[in-house]
Length: 95
Image (cartoon, rainbow, N blue to C red; front, top):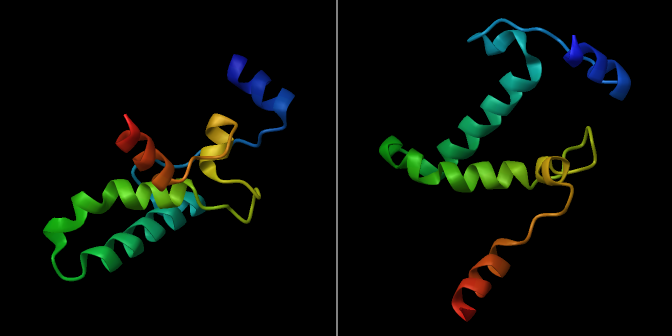
């Protein structure tokens, strides 16, 4: 299979986990736990507000340097550092 050859060529170790069972995937379980914890801190007791904070929490997780790689998930995905939020806001105001 092409996928197997690509993984072998790039030294990627693949693992298979059961669908809808994040306990079998340590990394997915940790990510879900982090997401829940951060949302809970922002939402306090009003859980209906949580969807409104999802983008901010996801952004913070994507732009935080990971100990395992030394890079942010954003940098690994796009090959460059993310722009700080205030730069994005400033550009919108200049237009």
